[in-house]
Amino acid sequence: MSVAGVTDVAEVREVPFAADLRAIRRLAGVLPGDWPVAVNGIRVAASVRPSKVVIEGGNEAPVTMPRTAFQVVYRDCTVMIDSGMDRETHDSFSTPDRREPYFPEAFAQVQKALADARMIVLTHFHADHAAGVTQADNFATLAAKTFVTVETARCLLNTPHRPHLRMEAERINQFVIFDYGDYFPIAPGIVLIKAAGHSSDHQMVYIALQSGREILHSVDAGWVLDNIVQIKGKAAPWVKEDKGAVLGQLRWLNNVYSNERNISLLVTHDDALIDAAIKSGTIGGELKL
Image 1 (tube, one colour):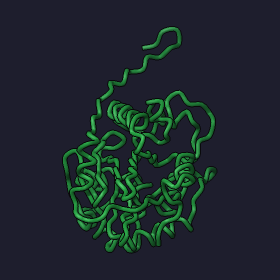
Image 2 (cartoon, one colour; image 1 turned 90 degrees about the vertical axis):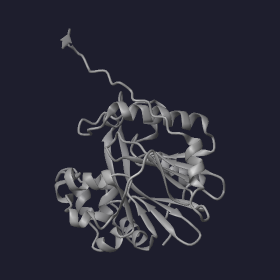
Image 3 (cartoon, one colour; image 1 turned 90 degrees about the horizontal axis):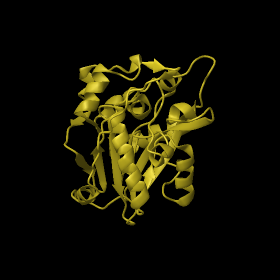
Image 4 (cartoon, helix red, strand yellow; image 1 turned 180 degrees about the vertical axis):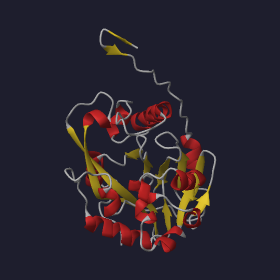
């Protein structure tokens, strides 16, 4: 319905998100072994979008949104959080007149880091998080140490992010497929947090370091930190999210950002935040190879 040229927009009903930090911190110490010593991040590509699609109420100012992968470093091994994506998959999101930045040398680092990692964790099925594994020449080797949830496996099978990423059950069954309730300690100091909304299989990642510092990777609940600070969701028409669930997660993350001074937030696609995290030493800007 519209009156005097004003179109009504259905109100988004916020779904409360009440992750329990005390429980998450406790679970970080459940598995035996030393906690990690560092987290590294790398940008394998970028997408440039106007602010008005990145955040509700934005404008035409361009926002550079890196496509990233993160590496959790232990004294004797590494764990990869997401896998970047290959050039073919990256280009499938472009048009001939708008080719977006891709960094093949960085993706080569990711490929080496994936091969060397003791474990790979995919936070959700979207191409920029999963295709570095699903499209890899050494898929079978990587899949044997790649942990995906039941819901991620279902998405890869039934609702691939791009048509060429559809996977047959035989290949999906090569992953380590698991399920959990609200939280899951996947490795010493690392806890997965179920956070469906951006996608049905979306997860956040809590990391406790030996130094006592804590990192919370919000993944794609918000694309940039401003989504969290302003508690405003994305406005890209092609993104099909549970907006109410995402809004609840943004409010929870805003509370963490405002009140948990020991926790540093990582946001997948926030270029400035990643630069600041590298400059401050919160994360390293090169992968350990």
